[in-house]
Image (tube, rainbow, N blue to C red; front, side, top):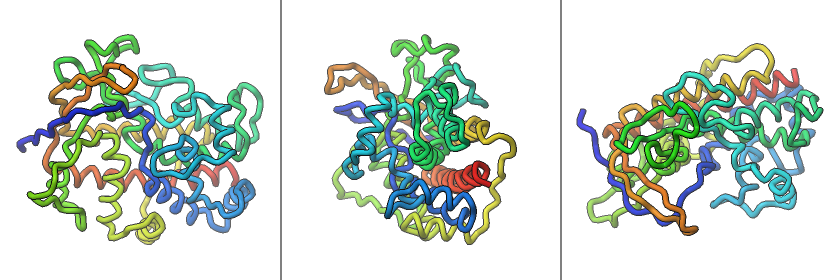
Length: 348
């Protein structure tokens, strides 16, 4: 099938790699699924004991993004501000950048860090298991903070682009760097979680004709801005996934999903090993997310801080919105079920 060129336009700022995964609706959908699955259990009682008045498992899934002061979120509370001051590297907690071609997450390998999402989830799980020694809890998370991070990052880690990263050679190929020093911005470029890979929104809107109820692009509409691939996965595929199920809200999505009784495998063994397994599963999803996607034209940019970087146009299959939204639906479902499984494993 002929590939469609999505041409990049100039970007005035660099979007950080920790951009919000799934967006508010995606995270809330994960939380709504999990909340329904743990009803009446010891896990529900333990979760409730760590919540503030008015909070639910669904609502706290956006806490960690709100703490960053993300666009579209409420002003960070005093509690959130205290958390970010105590955790200056908190932005890095939300993702890891393993080359998407890899099969497994390995601590210390290219794209990983001691504060990445796998390491952060392991620490938060340990805290809820009652392990509060310095080795298990070096960032001194409280039990409430641990729950808030797990509720959010169970969604993050199931967003394929928050685990599987694309690295691009200067001749326009996806490559696998052998060591971190290979990613030098000269021979190999870091796509920053897909934020520097740009889709043409006008063209993508035209392709969305495959999606029931998706907004249609009219020929006389004004041209739309380019959209980072990461942002497309944060929100557009969520909207499409919900529309394909005939739902519009996270709660409706959860109800429709649960009514279908999907089969989501449950891991056995120590929950501390689960984040690595989730990351490995997300790498499978990342390979699908990058199927029939190829880099195109490089454009040098300068950020507001005067830093030089490159954006890269993408070439995709015309049908890309359909498999991407299907994958997003599957990953949201996995995120909700795995969050519930985890909480019940910690609090049987």
